[in-house]
Image (tube, rainbow, N blue to C red):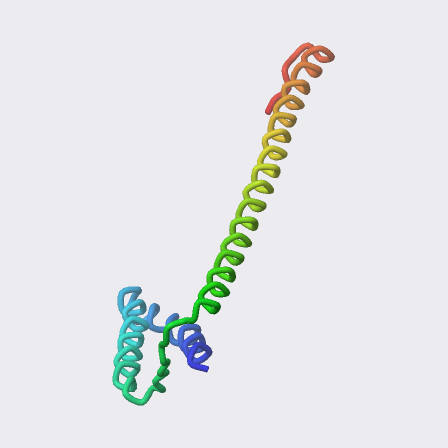
Length: 123
């Protein structure tokens, strides 16, 4: 809800501040509001919920399962990264090929025009 209020204020108040006071005050206005919001956030920190987690040593079985899950996650990330790089290289090579093809066609157009008209085409 606060983001919507901020967006409404910026759309309605900022243009008027810019027209009346100039850009410096118009940009100073949201900076002051963000500073006030930070102070309000800091003052309310004592009322936030506290998440207490109890830490205990993992058993050997739990450690093995945890290590296996981490390894699977890292291998999936690595596979996705590798596939993304392969696709990026593939599409890059297609783009390079099309660029060369366009250059060749442009050069060929000039040769054909010179052959049939006796002058080079104007660009």
